[in-house]
Length: 351
Ligand code: NDP
Ligand code: ZN
Image (tube, rainbow, N blue to C red):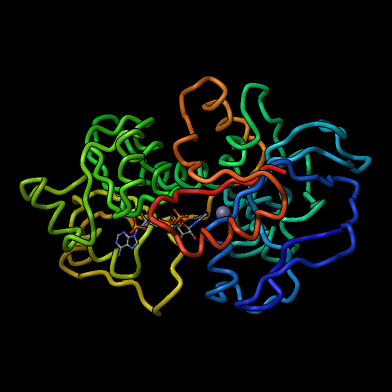
């Protein structure tokens, strides 16, 4: 079969590979819609997961089931399914402890385009199909559905880990597709005032649609100073980080209240240490929680989040700025995610 792969660090291309085999609990799926991710860019161009050769990329897909193993109960060939970016091993002890993202070790629930071939292929393999796939609701398009693989669950995970409550003031730093879904998640959880921090006009406009009340451009000066000023020197309740770098934590600590939460979903690709100012952290006694999380995968999460699209509580279409038809456009989609032109939020490719 054909697939679009990381040939090695800094090089991508189309390759031929054996079609994967389907274990008794697994499924083989043919993609109907896929989306390249900022994480694919980190993988190929920043060596985020180390060297890989001929690894098929991609972890965001909606597809049609081609084959299921003899122990799969709830899915059959022909079903249209959402596949989460994270496909845990549900029998692992980490899963039993509530951290299925880390089933088998730190971040090991992330399999596609990491430890096995990803979804930019004619067929891809899904482990534990009953636990890791969900039927695509009939009134949700394949393009919309593919935003459920990673963007919606990651942004919402940021809002969940921040335990956003009614009326709270929340700052979302970084409003690419992930941060925008953090804005939407915070909004759905009842946040009052929402600061959205970014620079691209298209993202700022989308942030307002998703419930942001205040837009901050980090290119206009220190984010903490700008938010503090807008807040008349009062702190915010929660901060969700979905962009920026190690210095972003320092800014987050400067604006969050005692007892507040800094919730990170951003990939930290550079530098050895996160900066936490001792005084801003209440000299170690400020009851400020700092948490970072990989999105939760799995069927239940996909089913619940897809209800938001099915019942029109969430519209992901504002994210889909670039739509392509044809498998070959995967390459173009990845290049867009790498270059991040001013009008881009997220590309989607239907096949
Ligand atoms: P984007 O690159 O599209 O968005 C990043 C955002 O951060 C943009 O709004 C950008 O602004 C903003 N930004 C950049 N630099 C700064 C800065 N110094 N201060 C404040 N804001 C800044 O990324 P995605 O939304 O696609 O992904 C976000 C992150 O989430 C990535 O690191 C990705 O790898 C990670 N991720 C994590 C997952 C998880 O499970 N935890 C899953 C999927 C992705 P602008 O471009 O407008 O200038
Ligand atoms: Zn992704």
